[in-house]
Image: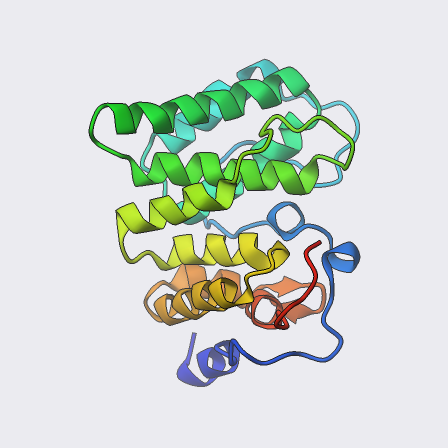
Length: 226
């Protein structure tokens, strides 16, 4: 990405864009917007609005997801893998519960062993937030009352500077009242994208007739929680 293009991408994180599109119009971004991962391996592709049968055996969802996550996959690959896992999990409550439970245990075990794993905490937090966006109101949510964002923040604290995690946190905080925290995540993601071509590509990708960077940066102060 050239300097001019990136300058256009890195718009002010405090600007309020007229005609801001709400989740109701654009759809939940953790689910509706695929993450570009290049040639990296993830779960088999599935459309976000998939309703019918699939050749994928949901009994393998936890095993296949953990195999990818345990392979030291980059954060963007983890985001896309957990997005696909959520779409599959909605078809089978048992598979959904098994996956979130195993990720919870994985993160807790890392703490118990005295070696807190930033990626394990990121995974369980991001999945919990994805579940919240995809499980309909009134439907049982396998994540229960989990605060996935707190787990992602813990992951960022453990890992240190990680623009891809900041990008994930920015996506999550679109639906929260703390716009200051959201803008901070956006700013750090944009700054880090200068040195991360795949992250820059994701920020420049289209979402509901604007770039993801513009969508993330357009959160007005005090926007009601969705």
